[in-house]
Image 1 (cartoon, rainbow, N blue to C red):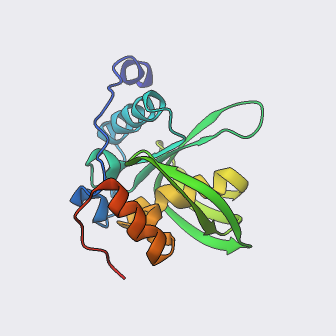
Image 2 (image 1 turned 90 degrees about the vertical axis):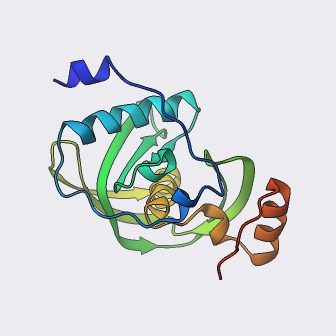
Length: 176
């Protein structure tokens, strides 16, 4: 079954800020089936085609709590599919420059916890508990934010956010 899905992966359209779908909080996935598996593989194809390291379902217009993250630290690149991810622990603080596939060409320093624990389901419905640090922790936090309608520029100062929005030429209402 997985081979059939993998052989039919599709590159999907990434929604660009200020698309309203990026501001919607999505509901949990209640049942993991073939549609979610196909979606995950399509998200992987989309993320890789865009040269990203993470992607959330809302970024492709799908209101499901599914994220794809690439663990790029270490010798083996591994793509994780996290369904209904919930960050249960956070420790430390670190500043790092972030970008986003939904805000092409935009980046800014963002302060986030350095260590996290996340609980989620995989594509088989099994529960996972992942202790992450460094870049993997950052990617998980960034993508989980998308599930709650948060984009990374919401995590920077008002003045920096205002400058970026002006740079984008976006006429959007900034929430505070």
